[in-house]
Image 1 (spheres, rainbow, N blue to C red):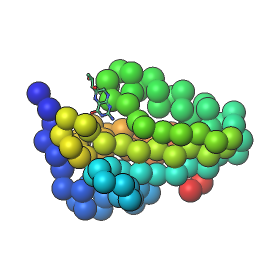
Image 2 (image 1 turned 90 degrees about the vertical axis):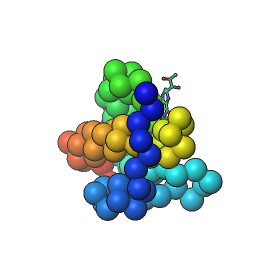
Image 3 (image 1 turned 135 degrees about the horizontal axis):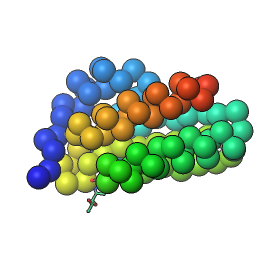
Image 4 (image 1 turned 60 degrees about the horizontal axis):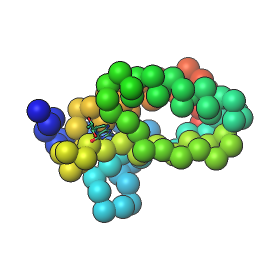
Length: 101
Ligand SMILES: C[C@H](O)[C@H](O)[C@H]1CNC2=NC(N)=NC(=O)C2=N1
């Protein structure tokens, strides 16, 4: 069953490092800046393992040391607890790897 869509403002209030995407979809976005490509790709590898386990995948792009992440749930047309869970994990990994914004 599809998770319920959460109120975006409420979800964002609990995730200070994230903001609402400017695009047409309700989505959480965060830019992360690492020391170098190696750290950025290491971060993506760790997140990819959880994404695979959760069957919930970030939309993201990487340029050298920068990773731009967008989280949304297609079936729910917005943000669900799965996006919030993923965002929290990303925050933990980013913190552990010394990422900036
Ligand atoms: C069929 C499969 O479970 C779905 O397409 C999943 C895969 N990964 C996903 N990832 C994200 N971020 N949102 C989704 O709605 C989504 N749906």
